[in-house]
Image (cartoon, rainbow, N blue to C red):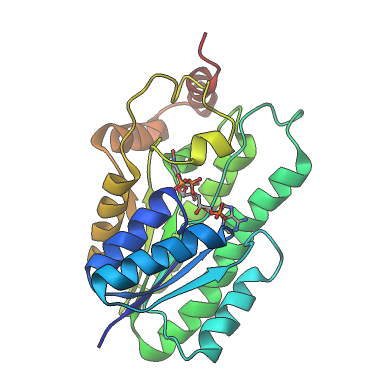
Length: 260
Ligand SMILES: NC(=O)c1ccc[n+]([C@@H]2O[C@H](COP(=O)([O-])OP(=O)(O)OC[C@H]3O[C@@H](n4cnc5c(N)ncnc54)[C@H](OP(=O)(O)O)[C@@H]3O)[C@@H](O)[C@H]2O)c1
């Protein structure tokens, strides 16, 4: 029997590529994002190419209880979610004292609250079947404080710690939780975060969303708890544990600053 993957933020970047990976494996899909036109284009393309069923759900996931509404819709349609991929997220570049609160509030709601609510709702159903896989897209930003993107880095630290904790709670079950931690990746992310001038990305050749999605899917299928994309990223993410925290924050600031 076909399995179904629910992917948030499937209209662009890593989420769109994750949708394609699942489609190639023959999984049915529930694709969630705000851009209805892009979702329906992808729905048509994947249904035709892979003979799968795709449900496109137009939803702003930064609004309270959006996850509950999507859950209710999949339930009413009798769709069982075997793979939950909490991918939708965004960042905002700049000093905390100048950045816009409304944008930050939406970021916290999307990156933290909606991800947590989705996990609770679908995990309870997975528990009844003792089967399922969850992928939460964190970031290498999760491993240290991030001056110039303070709120974003903190939301990703939440995603990492939350995912590791519940993965531990589920260790005797046939359910796995994977925190995918990409480094800077080519996608719409930099434009949305207004960070094209940051030293982290300016003039850099970044890995494609497709490469990161393929890596993330493999890690989820293996049930890996923390999946950091790229050897250098993995070394850096782990090395910060051995350094004084103020030095780590100072180095991160120098990487995050604007390029000249
Ligand atoms: N790219 C990187 O450098 C990088 C590095 C580490 C981690 N990540 C993480 O990877 C994940 C995917 O980002 P990406 O790089 O693929 O960025 P992206 O190309 O900007 O894609 C973000 C996706 O999230 C959706 N989204 C944004 N706000 C939403 C909202 N309010 N409601 C519903 N959907 C929303 C967007 O769809 P709509 O606009 O259609 O709603 C889009 O499909 C994020 O969690 C990000 O934090 C990215």
